[in-house]
Image 1: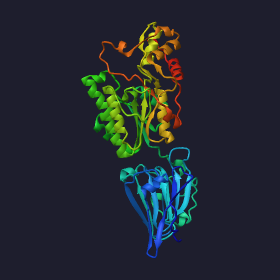
Image 2 (image 1 turned 120 degrees about the vertical axis):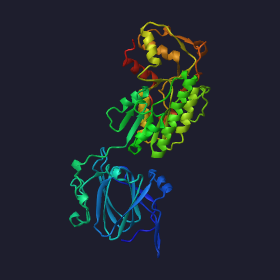
Image 3 (image 1 turned 30 degrees about the vertical axis):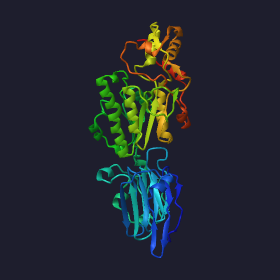
Image 4 (image 1 turned 60 degrees about the vertical axis):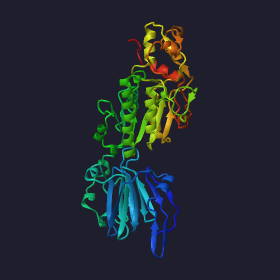
Amino acid sequence: MAIEFSKKLTAHETAIPGVVVYDLPVHGDNRGWFKENWQREKMMALGLPDFRPVQNNVSFNEKAGTTRGIHAEPWDKFVSVATGRIFGAWVDLREGPTFGAVFTTELDPSQAIFIPRGVGNAFQTLEDNTAYTYLVNDHWSADAQSQYTFLNLADESAAVRWPIPLERAELSDKDRAHPRLADVVPMPPRKILVVGADGQLGKALRAEYDGEASVEFVGRGEFDITRQEAFAAYNWKNYSAIINAAAYTAVDAAETREGRAAAWANNVTAVSFLARTAVEHDLTLVHISSDYVFDGARHAHDESEGFSPLGVYGQTKAAGDAVVSVVPKHYIVRTSWVIGDGNNFVRTMGSLAVRGIKPSVVNDQIGRLSFTVDIAAGIRHLLESGADYGTYNLSNDGDAQSWADIAGDVYELVGEPRAAVTGVSTEEYFKGKDVAPRPPHSILDLTKIKESGFVPRPAREALEEYLGQRVMAE
């Protein structure tokens, strides 16, 4: 069969998600032929993921009818034929709804195919002296081979129609002994690791991903991200993303000598370790930012605004954001006035209300609440929707309010009069106290997150639900 020269580089989707066949331009004359077997820039423009190959392997097969597979490896592969012609069969052996899906085609040197991790690969040579090449994004080792998933070439469910019947083909004894589909344990997806999983946001993420084995949660006691040596305990090849829900958030204590050191250790140094890990292992890093990276001079803040932090906490969060921004696959999720399962402003106001206490509350800091349940849902949306990497503001929606306005809402919702709350200025409230400066405006523009397909709930709706789920009296 003659090679078709001068094809246009073209991608063809298949019945198996992520498996894509490529027509390759092959240029030939009386001397032979030449092709660009792998061209990162052009292929990425066609949608091929930048899977960062690290090893190239070649399988030479002397006789037509040589049949190899079906092997699903724990890495991605870009497969092509160097010389000769093959019949290829690919079976989805990943955990999920397409488990068992089959795709077959013939390949010659003018074609290639991308095979994601967990999809079984097999081929049968149709010509003598055929060379089959694999470009892979992990290094082969005996340990890695223990993570393979295998399927028998003669499986009745897959029902691959081999051009040369298997009884006449050249097979290895190992390939003959592989299990049928009913006995195959699907290859699980790479995991998401949530660090800081015992804080308010971490608890919300636990609830968001409840029961999902592909998400792993660790607290400070299990994984201290401020210690670089702690990262060596993880096989990062088994992960796809890290969600960093850990942070030093004691705004006022950060202004002290001890607090300043702790804030920088947790919000910057630890983040640099996470960022380095994400870059080295091609992971997506989700990092939580804060309205404190701004001085609050603008009425509302969008994602393009430059940093202008007022205090140490804000400075460390801005520095952490800058570190994360250089990770190729990152989401910086900027929040304000976070409310979740733990000690927070809403819970405090609810407790005061049911005890009949009439508080003075700041009325010249303006913003919106960010409930952790909605932050967690937004993070999941970004990871699963394929949203462009970058920074996203994520608070609840609705009218901007002062802390005093929110306190009044809490009092009303627990059956106490709004008039019990007295509004005071920030200066008056903190008079005589050694505290960090606060941004007067913390309103986050939500246009970008909405355009990505996630529409946050109104803060009032989230507040009503939050108070309805908790007994505020202590």
